[in-house]
Image (cartoon, rainbow, N blue to C red; front, side, top):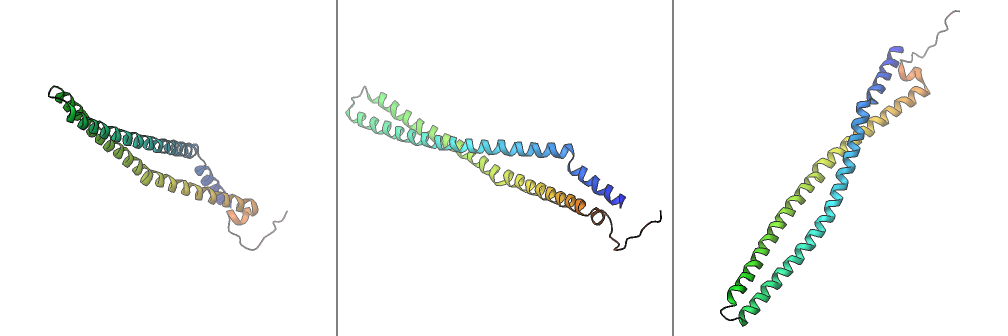
Length: 161
């Protein structure tokens, strides 16, 4: 019975070791940081998408204005308007590149959400199950130490004094 009690106590000590507590604390801290970053990035993506939409409209307005002025302009003004049109085309290309960069960042956020967070959640569930199991063992030991730590023979013997 003492050997069983010692074994149970060693298992409890191993589960509650300083390393396990530090690792659990670090995992929870990492989860909070990752969740905060994802939430912050979602807001940034919405702002960036809005800005890109405004830039698209501005580029289109510039192109239309350039086309209108080109019809009015004489030969000396044609080069200036061509430059404006080229600038509008370059702006469109820059917007396309910015969209590609945002898509790449969005995919990275999706990878974090699809792989890292579920793995952390599984680890947390496993830790919760282990803690629940330890709580159950401790309750059993408190309620009936003989049954929890040793084999109950069903018979009790009195030792002579």
